[in-house]
Length: 204
Image (cartoon, rainbow, N blue to C red; front, side, top):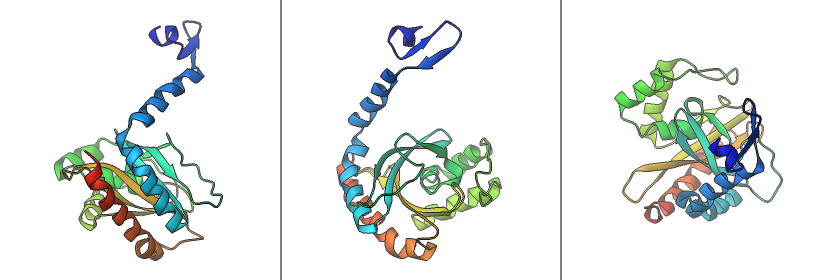
């Protein structure tokens, strides 16, 4: 009833649907979010250098939510855009963000997740997912190959606050026909790490 009176939903007391006004909530979040505001110009630069899409995500429960995106000048079509959600366990940004948990917290989080296959490559073995996240944490990055979307791979790094806390994860993704996993590590990982280092003193 409160949402209806505020104009965010319309309905007949039984069935309700959202109105365009709901977008003002998303716009308010994005405009007031320090992370996306600071990261956007840095991501634009990285995307231009990599000639691929660069995205920024935060953790929301067992999912990641993409809150910023930068594209190169050429046209690139992908399902991942601002507000898009994916399971954290099978995405490179998700594994980076889950890696900020202690081993005990991480094990409990993975145990409570319903791991569903999104592609034929999705790893749904909880012990292997846990091991992959711990390994990625030690490496300082995560590379996920076709587990979240068919034919798509991505590499991610953590984005730190000035005090070392992980507040987001940034990735570069590309279709498997364009970029190999080796190229991702050689070409894209240095760009992402430089961006993360540049953002750290700016994020409070």
